[in-house]
Amino acid sequence: MATERSIYREYLEALIIAAIFLQFANHFVLQTFYIPSGSMENTLLVGDHLFVNRFIYGPEPGGLDKLLPARGVRRGDIVIFRSPENATIDIVKRCLGLPGDTIKAVNKQLYINGKAVHDASYAIHRDPIVLPNRDYMPNPRDNFGPITVPPEQYFCMGDNRENSYDSRYWGTLPAKLLKGRALFIYWSYGGGTESGAWQGVGNKVQDLAKTAWHFLPDTRWRRTFRLIR
Image 1 (tube, one colour):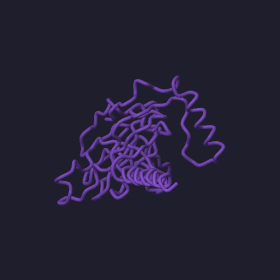
Image 2: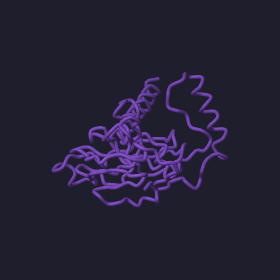
Image 3: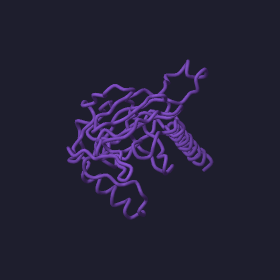
Image 4: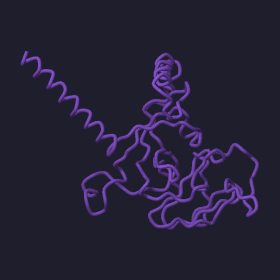
């Protein structure tokens, strides 16, 4: 009997250690994230599940950054961050403005530091209508700025320019809200993705059963393990 208890205790300790390790890794090294909206199409699709490198922006300069593979945010990085308006929500966008950059848009054309940005490789414009941005009718979707990015902040936009709620609307992103850089897609599911809001155990079980049933036919196999750029 004592031997059985010892074995059970070893299993329990192993599970606890594994849980602690996974929790540590999820908070400081790699985190999973899924795409619930189309604001980053066509780079990221609804139902893409990502690994996020949480360590890349982590160490402070002069410390472990000389020993570990970390770096600062670069223009063009696809970043995960806490919403400036609701800290319980995580958001994914592309960082386009670094501290000190001056950014504006004129009739959908983006300019950074006075130079036109030719970002056709990732940015899409699906609405040909150009919306004005006037004092009596503010709408920064197609025209805004110029805006100078403050120190320790960033300007982020979605690749699906007419369908993204981003820095054009809520302002620049404080560096302290950054969580990491999108690394690669480990699974892409085209069968519908939940919003992330808790709707009870019953709905959760139904969602899991539906996903399991449609896993093979609705998985986008060609997107599996695709690097995110």
